Every structure is written in structure tokens, then in C-alpha cells.
Image 1 (cartoon, chains in turn orange, yellow):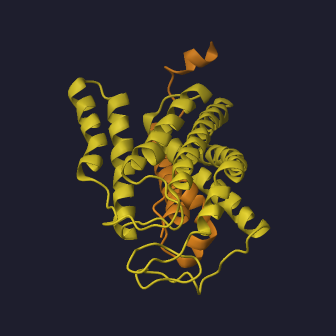
Image 2 (cartoon, each protein chain N blue to C red):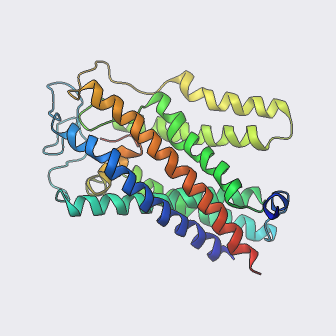
Image 3 (cartoon, chains in turn green, blue):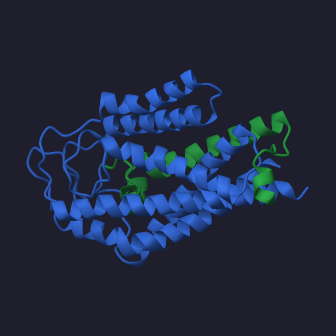
Length: 60
Length: 232
């Protein structure tokens, strides 16, 4: 019941906090996903190889 | 406050990444190993090999670090999944904070489903999950198509889910379909040596494990962010 109540409630963040959190999370997240999934470095490719195939990143 | 959100996402990625590593070891990775037995560069075809780089490749596999089979390779795959889990969870967290609504695991489940649609399911319509040794078009073109499809899918789904009116929702649906009307880059001939049965199994198992991973990741991210911000 608390969960249905929560659905219409805002996060307890100010507008600035929300924007800052969004930017920080999006930048860091993109960096990690790019590095693991897409970076065109041979070492990164070999380390992440099986994971890239399993998650269907375009590989090779 | 921001630190808690980032920490919540990293924790979710750690758990979901560890979970999916187990699932992959059972169902997905054996297929990759099996396919590597068939992996031989066919003359003139853009198949790929781990033992030696062909002239078509922009990077050389031979000179770079290569994990040994066994514990080292399995451990690095698990690490890959955990880092990838943290990255995906951070992107979910970015969506949640931009949206600005309180979250919990149920809402997180929907975010996870949207992540699966955007990052796995819809791109698979153009670029099906691929085993080593399968024929494929130029890598840069495929990566570009993949990134644009992920962006168009996530943006389109957000428009459909959050728009206040129907024209914008239809715009979202149009965004979803554009990458598939354009079409993904494909090889001109099917010259890979991997048996079709193996490839078909791989498509099914990798999509199912990715789907379970995304649902768990979304639920955990929603739960941890909801809890983390509740305590003040």
C-alpha cells in the first residue's frame, strides 16, 4: 500500500539536485557502458569479449 | 544525496551483474566456446578470429592482452557484467531522477523492462545477438547503428510513456521504428562457419538472460534509490 502511494510522490530532491544527479548518473553510466561494450581497444575487447557477445553489443 | 543515488545504482549493478554471470555461465558462454571451434577466417569474408587479426580489422587481436581460458576468462566476464550492470543501472537512475517521481522495486521493474527493450530487444531486430565467427558487416557502421537505435528506442519509449498527448506518443512510436526502416548494416553474403542450430540457441538464450538481468537490475535500482532517499 505504501508502494501505490509512493507512485504519485516526487523524489525528495530539489530541481538542481535532480538535474545534477541526472547528469552525473548519465555521464558515468555512459562512460562505463561505452568502455565495456563499445571501446575499440584490443585489450578492452579481449577482456570484455564474452560479455559483449552475451549482451549482443556489435563485436569485431 | 547524489552520492546515494550513484551508490544505489552501483549496488544494483553489482548484484544483477553477479546474477547474470551465473546465468551466462550455464546457458550462454558454453555456446560462445562452442562457436569458437568453428571460428576460421574464410577468404574474403569479414569473419573474426581471436588467434590472428585479418586485414579487415581496425585493431589487432594478436598483440593485445588476452585472458587465459578458465578462471581468468570467467572472472573477467563476471567483472565485465558487473561494470556493465553498474553502467546500465546508472542510466536507469538518470532516467528516474530526470522523471523525478519516487521509485520502488515495482516501478523499477518497468524501467528495467524499458532498458531491455532499448538496449537488447529492439536493437536485436536489426543486429541479432552474434556468436564469434559469424559473418558481419563493418564494425563501426554496426556500432553507430546500435547506438542510434538504443537512443531512438529509449527516447521513443519515454515519449510514449510520459507524453501528455497523443501526437507526441505517435512521434515516440515513429522514433522507435525509424532505425528499422533505415535498416542495420548487414554482410553482403552469409559466409560464417557457425552452425545455424548454435546461432539460433545463442539468440534465444542471450536475449532471455539479458531480459532477466534487466528486470532484476531495474527492480534493484528502483528499490535502492527509493530506500536511499527515503531515510531523511
